[in-house]
Length: 344
Image (cartoon, rainbow, N blue to C red; front, side, top):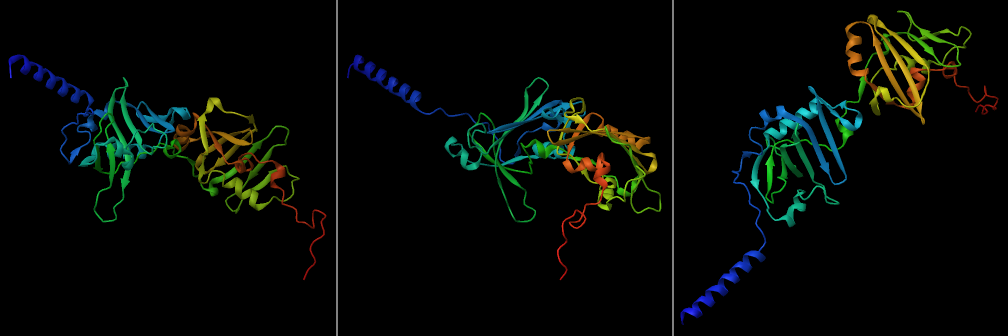
């Protein structure tokens, strides 16, 4: 074989090798991670710079933003999130360990729940913790959890880093929710009914309604109007329990309180506390603004209430701003003029 033939063969071989390289699937370089390593070494220190957290799923994105020392939901006007829930998630992220390398085949990612979170039908979540410039401090795609029933066995979850094909089984508790409703502390107040001593209600077009009780009274009684018939006991008890286990359905900044004002009420309580309630009706929904007076307890309550308007159950309007008609005993069929059923 002469030199020209050798040259042609060599050239052909080089072309074949080059074509094979171009046609072969590209391999995504994977970092050299030892099983058992932290998913994000040193993250605890870097979290001091965190300013934004995103939790994305196929059909929605939850955003939390930092406001000084607190975190809030921009979609709720910045209303604070549950501090213990945020702490649990961030601690879980810092302690998460990559226990076992699993599939690096993108075709198998959906089986572990670590496929593209933006793909229709995907159940994966993308968790991103960002600094003030928008640079990620931590990013992780979260998939299916593995439930173990044995004691003293850590929880585990399938994870994948964005841009990498390698999936991992990670050990540690990482509680992440994309539903904003799960991040809200819905408690407004919990003040015992026995603390309510006086209620003054002012409704437009209605005479003043005043209820009170002394230490010996089991429940409130009507002082004004003086000619009001004996009130329904259940209705009086509902007014006294207005602040017991009070929670909200929705929240927004107080400056944007919707609807038509329904007057104002003042609740006088023990220990010098007084609470002003300003309810509004908006398309059948009841919204309230609250303002407390009297000492440190009032300051604490106002710190939670003053910037916000709360939507509460529609039945609470009769507790916060009752009409005199709301206190009348319900008529029985015989009282309403309907013949009573015959006695057996």
